[in-house]
Amino acid sequence: MKKVLLLFLLLILLLIGVLFYRTLFFTSKQLTSIPPSRLAIDSGPAAEHLAGAIRFPTVSNQDNSKNDIEAFVGLHKFLEETYPLVHAQLTREVIAEHSLLYIWKGSGQHLKPIILMSHLDVVPVAPGSEGSWTHPPFSGEIAGGYVWGRGALDDKVGVIGILEAIEKLLAQNFQPNRTIYLAFGHDEEIGGIKGAANIAKRLGELGVQAEFTLDEGMTIIEGVIPGLATPMALIGIAEKGYVSLELTVDGEGGHSSMPPRHTVIGILSSAIEKLENNPMPHRLRGPTLKAYHYIGPELGIGARLVFANLWLFNPIAIKQISLSPAGDASIRTTTAVTMIDGGVKENVLPTRSHAVVNFRILPGDTIDKVRDYARTTINDPNVKISIYGDIQNEPSAVSDVNSHGFGLIQKSIMQTFPNTLVAPNLVVGGTDTKHYQKLSKDIYRFLPVRLKQEDLKRYHGIDERLSIENFSRIIQFYGQLILNAAGGENN
Ligand SMILES: [Zn+2]
Image 1: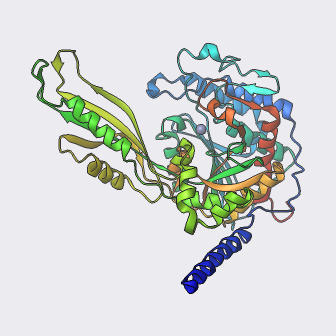
Image 2: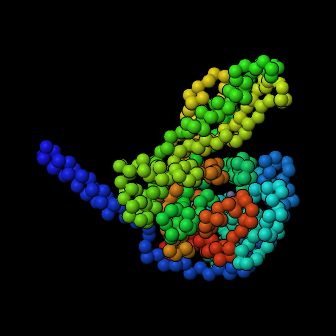
Image 3: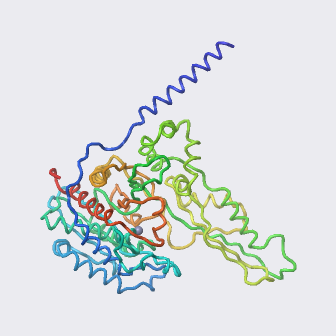
């Protein structure tokens, strides 16, 4: 008996030893001793330019025949007038009527090009919410140290940020040693089917195989990760897939005084309930797991112990991460019932009822897997399941965190946002890069907008704004990235 107890004690000690050993060697993945960027940015005119771009209401409506064509044409002209050096020295192609592709030819033939992406369109302002804005959404006001309006965060900041940086570099007679493509789609907010898809097609025709591609997607967050006060720059190395399933139930109808046990609405409701109550399983793997390899070492000892020893603490980590909707979305394929209808009159049995369920697919799952999951979970032949709408895509490939591109982006962040940590992560929404999968192995989704918890709702919401100080750093980031990627050894 004593022997057993001793053995047990020994095992416990061994376990504690392993846990602490792993925690001790769970070390920071941050770069150190990176000198700050010396690129000077004149923030006043740059802020004016961003405000000017916001004044063109380049709204992508779901029904794009409602789009304001003049606004897109006006924005093109505005860019031409605002960035004379860019338009004199880069080639510009208008793609699919309103998207723009700029080509900045590099001096070296042997280096692979890079692609910098952004988009010209914005989401509509929710009808009735105009009055809630501190400054009207398309007025492009500059007040209190901020540029206000739709597009300040998503994503005219990217377009203007990139062009400002290049205009500045051109004024200093900088010429890149590798070709740089600027790809600005005009319909990202409705899937990029015309804009990004056709730019990508054009780049394919040009035979482009990029060193890396950089688009919007993730940002610098402050005070959003529990237990982490230091700002954290998240670089999206993958994005989730997308599919909507339509559930349809047909019935015979008739008088509501003699109903069957369940009407088509009841049958549909039960199917929905089954889906909501049995979501696809959590998995801490792939890009999300990689994120915690970077975030984990920066956390307090308790969290560090957990993330260094996921072989043991995986269930605890999953429980913690899944507490917030954003965390939950990063570790499973999500299920969101978004549309429903059925019935026409209170005393008539409905003959048809249908609902739409939107799934965001975790890397590792597939559209087929989601469909199978829905079928087996609902397990009712009365419910017909089909794919809804035109937009569906598999999860993206996962880009490398040890690539040249990732290193360049990480370094550029450190140079322009000192005291900021960097981590890869999974984008739970979607970007235009879904159309660019064949153009480069490494695709990153990051724009260094600094966001606190309370700013997250400004995306697609009310009072979208960007601080001028943040904007000048964003320009510096793009400038520095170009210098690092295409400036040769001396930069
Ligand atoms: Zn966007």
